[in-house]
Image (cartoon, rainbow over all chains, first blue to last red; front, side, top):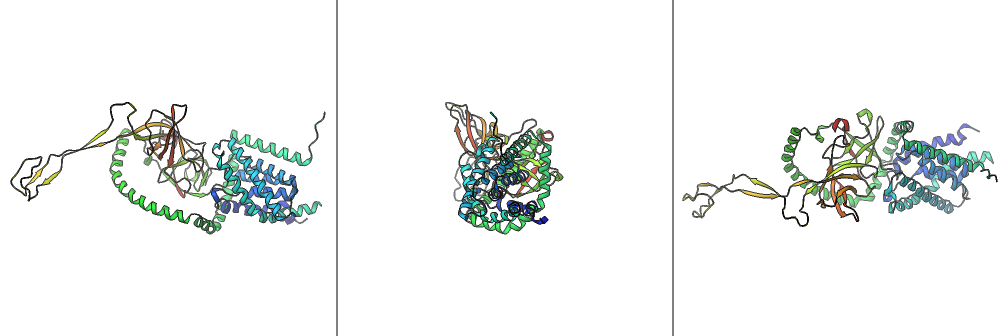
Length: 168
Length: 338
């Protein structure tokens, strides 16, 4: 297999662009004060396309990167990413499923991950999140990730499919 | 009975989850390795982040324009009014401020203006919805250190929580994990049943000079009568103005309650006559984390706390914490300033 076809090499190419888009566009364009989380959306994509193991590994890695660039308890993003990547990997919706089913799963998984992360944050002292703020963040993030779900599926295919094809 | 052996996928998630929980625990206990890694990441990624922010600026500006055009127009009109009012007030305040500074200098107290400061630009919005810290473009190389207070022209914004060589993070006032010693300044009102009203009396010295009108030569004044209609008469007039004195009503601990929510002051006694509109500033004691008298905001609501001897006091911050562009980091440290 050529070097450029290795998933990690492809991921290394995609990652800086993803990071740049997160800190510039996703963090600044905030409908109802809520920002999208492209790293979380990519963890979900990795799970849906690559299955539970890849979902958990990519989710963990992307979550660690989130932890490095944010000032939340270190490991919180990794835990959220690994769990959401793993569990969506168990859902029988993948790279070849219908768009509607795929987008719906991304939105639901985002809502679940966002709720989980918010509950963790509340445990770590963000009491203010309990209540309407939590509902707002969950719903808006689900909507934002539904919007970017299909473009990210293309990115996920680019990164993961050579690996999947090799193994089958 | 033997437990079922987890499959490879389950083993993976168990290991990763345990690893994550370990990392969280290590970070909560404080780890230089994690702090160093974060600082290094900030340093390494800031050029890339800056480049992407530059590229995305037109799109972000367009979004902001669409989202808040009408709101900005209204705000502009209100700000123009405010600027006019402030200009007048500033002139009146200048003399008082001068006197205040002199008095404080005589008393040997620290003034906010005595501290050097660094002006910094807010780099961008927090990358996560759960993060309240805001990043600025100045760091340890500019002499900044964790704990330094951050202000705008309006008032207190927060304090530095983490500092890398070229960037820093502000723990904002609305963060529930921040605590600022604060004092409430207002007019002391009489307690129910009290008979005396404390007031300050300002006596303006008699310096008024009146000229008798030619058409009323016989008009009497408080001074001596004269037949000469053009004669100037000095009236020994004394004007007395009663001004309710402002004083420190109580001190307490100001805490954030989250983004979009007012600040709360704890430990304000129910017997204190705190009212809506009273000023709230920082309160410094020995080794305090903040210098004295940084404006924070004004009391927004006051309610008695049910079943308690304290009041629920909510404060609206003066500084616009949601739309920061430039801030000043005061080079103050408790050991130097307290």
